[in-house]
Every structure is written in structure tokens, then in C-alpha cells.
Image (cartoon, rainbow, N blue to C red; front, side, top):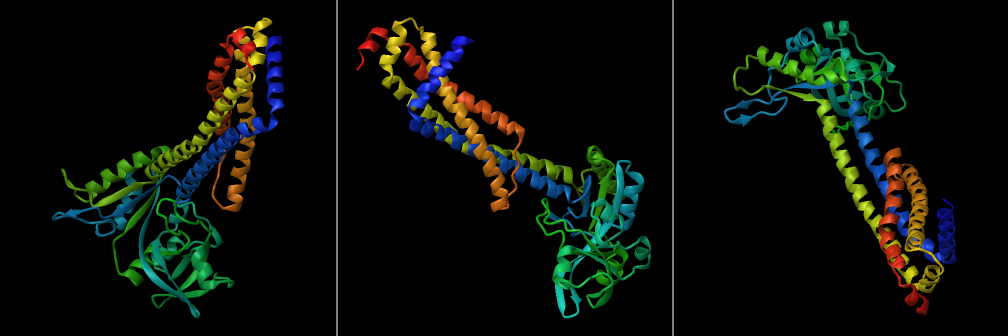
Length: 407
């Protein structure tokens, strides 16, 4: 232990004799480690942000949509068939054990007018449980009720984007707006959800009315475009999907090899795909940043080879007075590792600082994990050992007599 400490002191003194050169050598490691940490933080931050946006769509959600039928070789898209009805939604709740709640839904683009202002948005007809399925509380007011659905009442709940563009500073609660020339009373304003990570649209640019009101007074359609479903737990989403598919195929009399005339989209699948994409992007960013770490390691090897050449006579003297090859090799290896570890430590600080500043300056999400820091430390040590071994071995194998003659 005493010999190792003595070797470390000798190595530190050797590095201190050339402070500028040692600092410039460490710079490559500092940039490399800092870049890896910052890039991994950006990748993980983006991945977490997308997962949060998907989670904002609702808890344990599945979307059942009309469409996906093949007629005469023509494959119809989602929403282009009229086979999904309210009775299907009721059957899903009644006959699928893994389903907790379901809400019918249909929609239409509308122009909403308030006073002298108007705004084009999407009017969605649904039932009150839709907001529970979507985990979407009210910022102001209340939701419409089941009684409003039964009476096909002219009441509306609006999103934050609609509120801003239509009402501005005016309190929207209790105000009357006109949708397709029909008067509707605003009873609630939803909390802001922002952009949808799965669909890419503004979730707040929407308004919601009772499904019966939409069907009878706005669109005249008696079929559904979609059914929102919440499974009883995250682990039961795939069971719920299988149960819904089997139930709807039976209800729609789809036998044998007939294609489904509906589509079930499981948000767990969307989240998994987004997670895999995020991991690939994080790995790609880290790989690009690690190139600078490789360059820093080559810089350490280069400087250590120069140091061996400059200190050839010193090495010869140490070997002549009794130092072993292992002692000399250990000294130069410790110098290389010290350069790498100090550079890595400073690089971690730089990486953390950059990871903190990027969200503040650019508004991008960044998330630093403890695993990334541990990997950075291990990688710094490994770079020092890998790129320091050859110069250290070369120094240890010098012939003492030839080394003493070196000028």
C-alpha cells in the first residue's frame, strides 16, 4: 500500500510539472464525458416527455374505432364505416371483465361563435365518464351530467385553447356560444393537457357536448366514430383488448377469415414503441458523443508517449537503482488514469451544468440518471487504463543502459 501511495505521489508530481499540457490533455476527456452525459440526458428527457404526453391521454386506455374494413379490394380507413353503435359500448362494459369504464364518442368540425369572435374546432359528443377515463379534471365549472345526455341538453365543456381564443379575459362559465347556429351554455372548462404525444394534436383545442345532442342536433348520425375504454389496470390492457375484439367480432357477425370492421388501439403499444424509439435515439446520441471521448483517450496516449520519450533518462536511473519493470509501468499507468479520472470528474460537472442549462435556455427536456453518471466514471477509468497501458508498457521495457545514455 505504501509503495502504491508513493507511486501516486510521483505520478502527480510528474503531471504537475507540465500543468498546461496536462490540462489540455484532460480537455478531451472533459469534453467527451460532458457530451455523453448531456446527450444521454437529452435523450432520456425526450423519452420521458413523450411517455408523459401519452400518459396524459388517460389511464390504461384503449380506443375502439369504426373502420378497417375491406370491401371489394378497397380497404376503408378508421371512421369510414357506420357499424359501431351505442349498444357496442354498453356491451363492452357489461361483458368484458377487464374493462373498468367505457364512453361512446363521435365528433364533427364546427365553427363556434361568441359575440363578435369565432373559432373553428372539433366538437366531440360523449358521456360524463369520458373525462374520468381521460384523467381530465375541470379547471372551472363542472361536466355535463347523465341527465343532460338523456335530455340531449345544449351544454358544452370547452378546452383551454378554445377558451383563450374565444373568450380571452372573459369568464366563460354560464356564457352562451353558438355551434352551427344552435345556442349552447358553457358549464365547464377543462385543465390544459397540451399536445398529444401519440396523435400530435392539441388536446385543448376541443369542446365536448352530450353524445345525444351531437347525434340529434349537430351531425344527425346515430353511429359512433370511437369508444374510449379504460382497463381495470395497466396489466389488463391486453386482456381487455382481446376481450373487446372477440366481443365485437361476435356482435358484428364476423366469421372465419373476415377482416375486422373496427380497430382497437392500445396505448400500451404506443407507449412501448415510443419507449423503444427513445432508447434508440438515446443510444445514438451517446454513441456520437462518445467519439469525442475516444479522441480524448487517443490524446492521453499521445501525451504519455511523449512523456516516456522526454523522461527516458529518468526511467533509466530508476531502473538502475532497483526499480522493477512493474514499478515503472505502474507509475505511467497511474499518470494516465489520473489524467482520465480528473478529466472525467470535471466532465461530469460540465455535463450536469449543460443538462441543467439546456432546459432553461432552449426549453428542451433533459433528465440525468445516476446510471449515466456511474457509466461516465467507469468509462473514464477504462479510457485511462486502455490508452495508458501501451505507453506504460513501453516505458517499463526500456533497456536501463540505453536509457542512461539517452540525451
